[in-house]
Image (cartoon, rainbow, N blue to C red; front, side, top):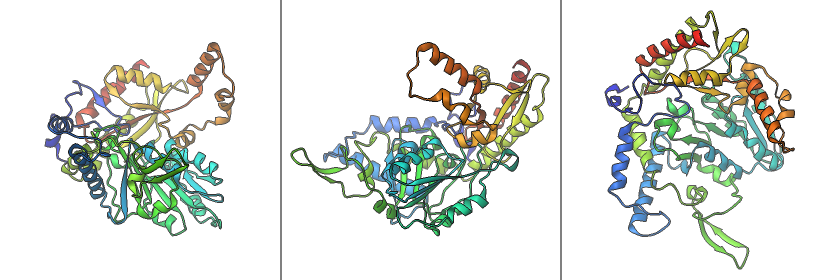
Length: 443
C-alpha cells in the first residue's frame, strides 16, 4: 500500500486517537475533500433534469461516475448498469420493485445486515415465502452451514414466481468472507442473486467479470469516507424485466396527467429508478474516491488484516485479568474483531466499554451491528423473552417506557467490534494495547 500517499491525510485525528470503526465508515482523506471543494468553487453545476449548460455539465459528471464504478468493479457496461442512491440501504430498498409473485421465494443467510433482512417483508407482501440458511457457532468460526445452504438452494422450484437469494460477500459482524462461488451455484439452480458488497468493498475488490451477481448494493463512504449520502445498486441488465416499479416520482418520468389516470415512465434502465433529483453536487466525487483507492495499490486488505491480527493477539494475550477477561468471538485473520468483556461471569454492558474507550480517544462500535442473526448465534439468547416487552401495540406512559428501556439495557446482548482500514498503523496497535490494559484494570 502506498503509505506515502496517506501521510498527512487524517489531520482531524488528534494526537493519540485510534479509529477502529472502519466497517462503520472509512475515514476520508482530506485530499479528496479539498479536491472536491476546489472543484465546486470553480464550476457551475445545475439540476441534470434541465437542459442548460450547468445541467448538462452535472449530467456528464454523473455519467462519468457511472463509468468509473463499472471500471472499478471490472463490469462490462453491456451487462451492468449503475443506479445511484443515497447508500446501500436505499439500493436494497429498490428490491421492493422485485417481482416475487405468488409462489416466489426469498432465501437469506442468518448472517445478513438488517437492510437485507427487511426484504422478507417485501416477499411476504408479494405472496412469496422466505427461508433462512443457518450459520455455524463460534467454535466453528461463524461460517455458513454449507450443507444446509446447498440443500435450500436445491429446493424444488415452484411453477410460479421468481426466486431471490441474498447474502453478504463479507459479514459486517465477524469479517468472515463468504464464498463468491455461491453466486454461480445459485444461478444454475434458478435463483437470482443479491450480493451485499457494502462491507466487503471497504477493503476487498470485487471483479464482476468473474463473479456475476444480479444486484450489488454499495455505500461509497464505507470505501473512502467522502462523499457521504451517495451509494449505488449495480444491476445486471437482465434484471430490469423482473423489476415492476410500484410508484412514480419527479425525475424519472416522461409524461403525467392529472386529468386522467395516465403516466409514461422514463424508458431508460438505471435512471428510471433514480427518484427525484440525484445528488448531482456529490456523485461526481465518487470518481475521485475510486481513483484514490486505485492509487493505494492492491494490498490495502493485507494491511488491514495485519493490523487486526496484531490487535487480536493483544486481546488474546490479555484476555485474563484480575478484574475481567476478554472473550473473542471471531477468528484471527479477518479485518474485524468482535469480542466481549466478562466480569464475575457476566458480560459487561458493551455501552460501558464504548464510553471508557471513547473517553480515551479509542473509537469502536458496540451492539449487534444491525446483524441479529450472528448476534443471536454468539450470545445464545432467545427473542421470545424480549417480544412481550417490545410490542408497539400499546402506547405506554413515561414510567413504563423507562422500565422497558432499563430492561433492554440489562437484557439486550451485543458485542464490541474493532475494525480496521488504510488509515490504521502499527502505532494504533501499541495504543490499543495500553488502552486495553488500563480498561481491564478499571472496569
